[in-house]
Image 1 (tube, rainbow over the protein chains, first blue to last red):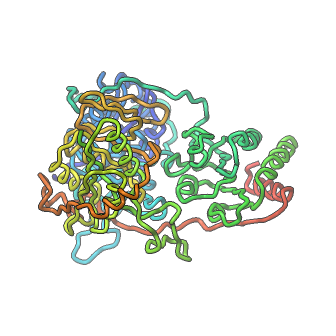
Image 2: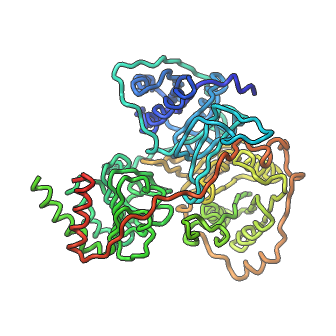
Image 3: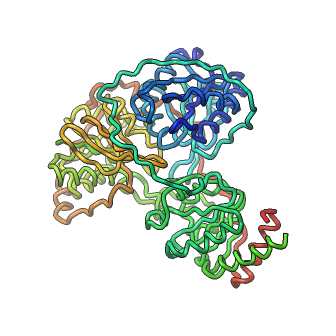
Length: 347
Length: 260
């Protein structure tokens, strides 16, 4: 492998049902920053069936080039044809960096691709920088410049590691959704579109999709909410979430929850905040009756303001809360809702 | 049917997490457990054994101490345990780990390989799909409701807003989530038998079709540039007031921060 041959920042532009996922634009935005530091371009790789029109959107959000791999075999996500698409793009275009979203699709696809082309893959990154490796010079060891430094939490969010991939290309990472910022949209900005099809021949590695079952969900995406009113086991019952819903309605927020609530069957999984749920960073996060296990905190600690209400004054949530209130949520939350109604009506 | 289950011994980050006074993780005080997703994978294998009849072999890579999780697996009902341990395998990233496990599994007959989705120490979810790539077999990650039909396996694969019902030809690899099932307990007789059972121990020499350049720290494409215990945002204020005062306190803070 001649590392000098590998150039440019590539991102996988995930789409589902021919709609770009949020992570696609987040990766284009981050890829643009990294490309600027390296003096190169950001290329989005769009894979699907009949997805070509999405290239315009990617261009407006900052992609310099869009490689479109369009084939009927790629209609619904399946590991093998998608892995073949990305591995072929990498072999053909030789990117220096390749980013994939750490979504259910990306975390399945990324490892399969990195294993096929023999490179490293750093999972679930929350920060990406261009820098030196080793970070500080070590006598007798060459310090490499312009390396991708990939930072990620491990041990359930208790530790942070920064990883490099100095001897293999591309440097690959999956990136947590909701962490990177998309660039502002520039209407009319065009990306150069390159159509590329490596050919898809089904074999035993192609699984057969017998059925696609979509969960009907009309709930707002908690990752987009500016204010989250989040409840834990301490709320006591699914019925009692009503007091959180009332508060959310008055303050213009969205209800979310902890894993315990999902495990108990009180709320659906797509409302779950935390390591096995979603990472959120709203302006305000109300943690109501949430004890604050490490796995939960990992998903919400980047919120600007954390307000915790819990009757147990030793609950770990108070260690991350900006404002902690020790008390009975059943008394405080309804009273807060009523008082807010009055306050907001006066405005 | 022959099923291989890959399991890992991990520090218990749930419940047993201990902190030093400065807020960093006290690793010495933490217990080790069988990784929860792996345990769910083992349970799935044992249910297939109950339903269709199967031989279940558990494989782990780790220090000699990792033998403990193999015995636990056998006490739950696994038939054979294989410990892959060797100094040259240490410091492996997911590439080198998956090469090692694939090299070990090439010695075995298998229709199905089950791994946990991810380990609670690394959280990468990479080793399972990477093993399947090295072995050239299909992978279905995040599997639910595993059924066997002839020479194929039918599973539900969960995504954010949907699931796919997938059919794959065996041999194939499945990754399992802790939410998949409630793992069974070890039985007293099982514990007794597992304590006396023979564990197969393999080293570097037993790995098939793996080059030295793909093993251990030296065979790992990713390298750690920096590792640190996470510096957490310090605790803010904590108040213990009556409900009315609590409400006034929150309203005041929301105003100060221009939320309302």
